[in-house]
Length: 90
Image 1 (cartoon, rainbow, N blue to C red):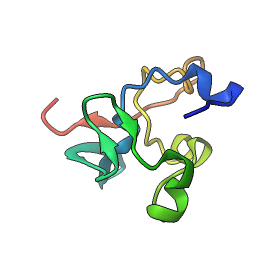
Image 2 (image 1 turned 135 degrees about the vertical axis):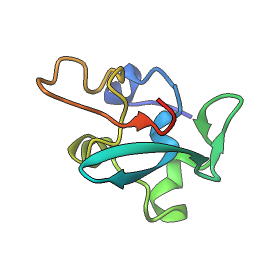
Image 3 (image 1 turned 90 degrees about the horizontal axis):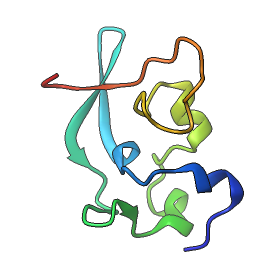
Image 4 (image 1 turned 90 degrees about the vertical axis):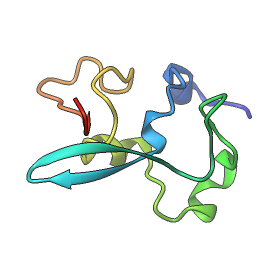
């Protein structure tokens, strides 16, 4: 899989591929991941075609907008007042 410059900052934690839910106004990670996530490498098995294979897959821009990436994600580092999801048992 070749990466573009923007994707090079990804630390491949795989957390963006875990299903999230809303509880009140808080975004919560569930322990369920997308069926296309390879949990050994934390990489998407269908990355190049992810939007076709999984219509609900979010672009990084949309994921940030709805607070679906964790606080320690390189994409949100430095974003003032960004609050990402938490794990349900935190």
